[in-house]
Length: 124
Image (cartoon, rainbow, N blue to C red):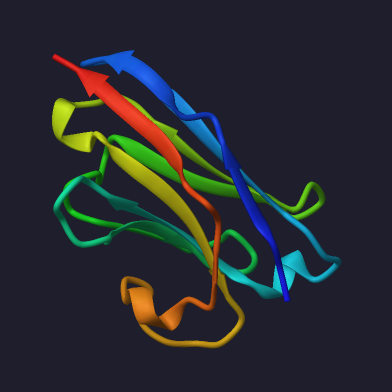
């Protein structure tokens, strides 16, 4: 089992940047596929980005491709989401998620562990 704690959210103007971090407990972090999802008010939780166990493969939603970068540091048990060129429509609670079984990267139900979320607000 793994516990996830997100940090780094906040208020930023459109065009600005933020870096989210997700710290994981446990000694088997490198065995987990990691992802970021987000949920805006009144909307479903949606996939943002995912990274495989080694960090060598990354996957992005079309809406963030080219602006967001997911990365991981297995020595620090941490996954990051660098968000650049932020837009008001990126406003949401961002969640870190983990799983150690294979399956589609973008499917929310494939992830077994979730953090509590961190709020990102982008003002226009």
